Length: 277
Image (cartoon, rainbow, N blue to C red; front, side, top):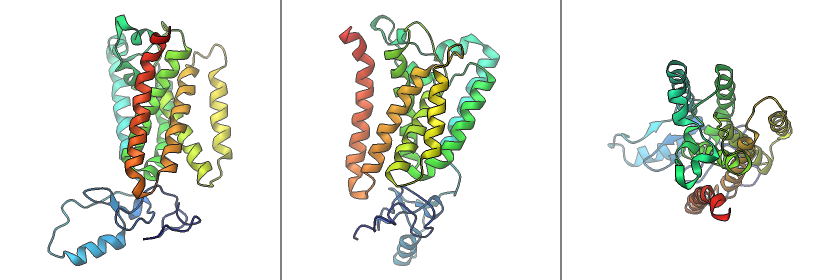
């Protein structure tokens, strides 16, 4: 099937007002969350689903499950896990927090604990801190998860969290610990900004919002890890560009390869500071 016209390719063919990154695995048309049916590999549109059932009427669609429209399951899961972790922090105090926090010190050869670069996104310093981050995640998760699909969205969140920790590693005092999901959330902002710009959407308000949040991180006395914000937004922007440039079905192997290469680069950078010191 030939590519859709540029004016329509980024919108659901059944709901022209809804942007989406998800393509039908069979016909290649863009479909929103409401029109997606999960198949064994990828998703398919209602017409292809109807055709498949017509050609195989006796086959029960055991592996085909209607995706629940407007239900960002990955976002809800991350929020739930993070709130449970904060509850454990509240009950057990520093015993839990000290297991999850990250500082550059934990990337040094003598005390190498690399998993902290991700676990730090689960811990928070106060109830206000965790609620603000989870509210922001809820807002951007509802926008990005249906747009990208669950796999891409989860990769974006995790790799943005890792990139945020790299910002801390390279820019912050190695003995000052940090906690919070801000790096990952700024990654979502960075990816959404790039996607909006590349797909022709109006990104002015988002750009202002991101700018304000970045500036707030540099205000003395607020004790905000701006280094994680910088690392996260750069990582998210890179991934957003990868998603935009490799969105066609035939480009899926390239997309997976580029995401894997970027993840490998982030891991290598976690060693780089001490090799060049």
